[in-house]
Image 1 (cartoon, rainbow, N blue to C red):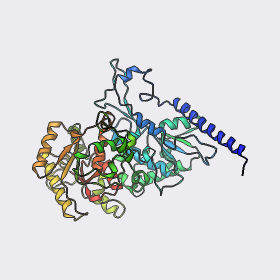
Image 2 (cartoon, rainbow, N blue to C red):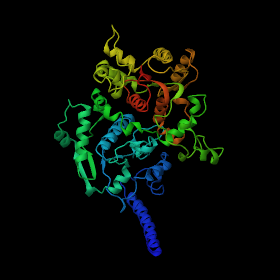
Image 3 (spheres, rainbow, N blue to C red):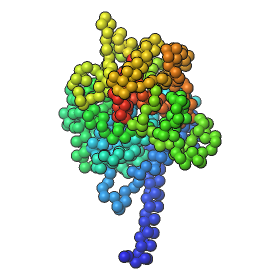
Image 4 (cartoon, one colour):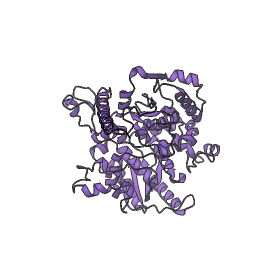
Length: 504
């Protein structure tokens, strides 16, 4: 046994080391070029405060205290390896970006590297303005863990994950531990040429070739510039389906969890979805139930994020709930474009197409619907009807799906009774649609407009809607939509039967 004085000295040294590590961490992140809207002290940027953006302080704290955001110690055997994709679908909608981020998380996992997750910088995000009177713009920065606390947000990879693959890190931490002098750049043009990737390459070929390249590189910090291995044009095509046997069963999807922020929003609004008791997956923690003030839980004074455990997609569905995605707004024009371009369904929504189902039998999930063209109808007219269903078509389709769910032919029978409509439609139009559904025998019919959201939740309202659609027993979506496609892939990975995913 070592002398007592030696043990005291060792203990003191350890305390000093931990303190210095924390000091070094704070010093490093304070140098981060990411220190923008959400990081600059208010005293230095009063004009940004005038925009009144959510600050996501609790989310920032959560991200910064993830266990992988610690400096290496003398006890660390190997230095973690990372890959950063700075060109992920910039300028597109959040769901297009998120599709790419999820796939890149899996690519990083296969390459034995930690994915680097950035903020989502929202363009034109009502009701949060981004332009000051002088014309300068300060766009809303939304941290990843406002959306998801799964592997893409640095969450756990699960018990069966490859031990050589580290957890994802924030862009802020990347800037701290990957100085520019240590970063090795991979340009898209050079890599595509080297890997022999072209327009005929399948999704599986692209995924495995990229994974091998990034895995074999010795550099600890790698950045991919000049594009992204899987851009939104590729993801939106049917070439993506070849990835599913690897991607669909990966920790990225099987360990997926919504953020505590979204979980809190669903918990507060659970009465919209069901008259039953709050399920354990959405309930407050035991300690929070005891210590919560009577005024907490409201929009004005929401519970702290630590009161909720992020909702996993494999949690039991909300019994009796049918989730509908009814896209309006910009789709008035976009559906015409899609029909005129001859577009097919987006990404994973094509699993119901007969040729894809036949080619992937036993490897791909068998969705029941696809872009069908009735006899005597042009493909363009059929596509528009699938993309922009009329109120009468919505009511008829919901009735058809309710009957099929009750039959128990494709999956255990469901008694669908209530409806939640995720929509950007005008309130009056949506209210009229809800009345039509109720007249057709549905019980409670609630919509996005009924959600009571705190300010930071409002910034991720589309993801709150998606979490409700994933939690529904059965879902009807827009086949052309990336939002619907993300809902489908998360439902599939969470264990929902493939036949519970339908389209208009």
